[in-house]
Image 1 (cartoon, rainbow, N blue to C red):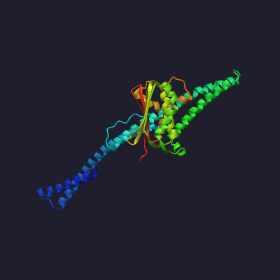
Image 2: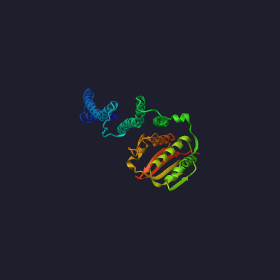
Image 3: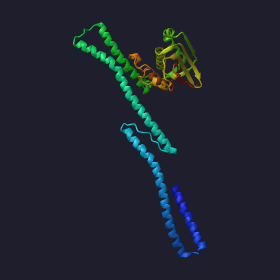
Image 4: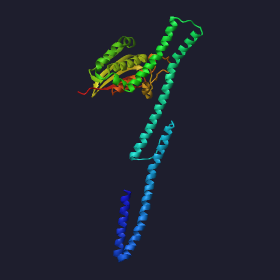
Length: 334
């Protein structure tokens, strides 16, 4: 565009000046040629400086955000969280800046989650390992004598550690797609799978709830039955552990091309703004409660990973005490 404008400017100005010299000044021959050559040189110099100035301003406007993006990328390379790049831009540059800021925030959150997960793993393993070490040191120093009760306690602590490691391994397996290779997906009658899970918890539900409601429609999805059973088990276990009401409602229904499952009950208070945190690894509503292998804060994280592997979604709607877990799974297209 700049080149085109320069050519038009130079060409039109030379043409008009030539017409002026011929028509108004009656200039012809070599005098006209020499005059036009001088004028063309001046116009060319002027056009060059105009184009150069326009190019300088344009390039500077482009280079400025690129320099800031480069500086922010260097901060990320040095494992620092850069400040957001705030520059007025449009078009592709605006998209680039927005995507970079989003990427930087995501990397920072991932780094924080990784560090938090390492702290949580250390916290989960510290108690059973401390107990085991204490017993073994006491046995070594002959402070206590070994007996079946002591060895049973050591075995329980060891199983707690093993359980946590197995949960982490299973979570990573679903996240990395390993289960697709070990357990290929097949047609699953999701209504029957959900009903089987309800039967497993039937007695415990009768003790916890005075009123239960189950409305489940037929539906077929492509998935892994054992994985889905574990999702339902983890959700029911969470509901039972944190229940604060006397009513449970479970529904399963076809919603367009998806199968929607909901679990509604009154539970312990959850701040609505933090509802997504319960699906994070090692997160607990009550940070002070004692740790157990079955309560390592991984159940819902595993459930979310399994549902994601099924190309579905798992979430929670809550007003603080009335909670509704929901699962959306794609139905098989007929």
